[in-house]
Length: 221
Image (cartoon, rainbow, N blue to C red; front, side, top):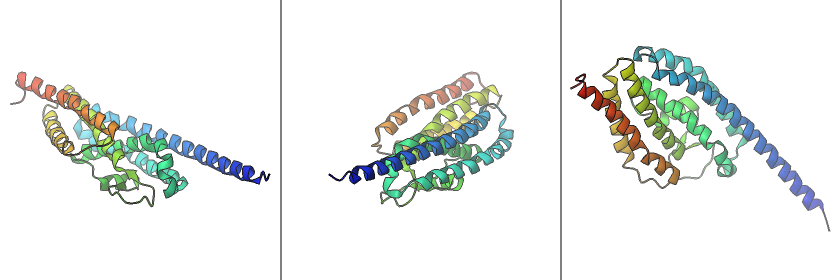
């Protein structure tokens, strides 16, 4: 019996193990930068709206680093193995996309598009059903990041009132309601995404409660 076949199999297993470790290390570095970016961006809940641009400028170095870390990760992945390893980095990419989505809202008061994701992160959102030929951000990752923003919006509405800004909650309420209506047009097949979408109503309710409280107090009409 020729044992060379087992020697060759072990070489393949060693290569796969090395790749697995390299992917884990790349994800670890990506997560580290995302946490720093998230910590900086969370200050949006504590500073006046007039200081928002200064805050957004402070996070630009993190976006540059995230783009670099994603490029490192992408360099390890061949298109044919994209979905084999995808679960390893899916949550990390969602975190990066959430930073983009919330940043774009803070700066422009609108929903971040797949084009915004590409501009900030350097990789396209896969909006087609075609074959994967390069590293991409999946549509589900993008949609998860949009869902995550609802929680940020509900916090922002509450904290705006605490900061004495009674106009901002109305703007947030209008945007969140329109965004929620848009989501309702989607026929979501992904179970995790559908469950998270179902939880949006609690964030919408919190925003509406802020509006109701302001109206009862006679602070808005």
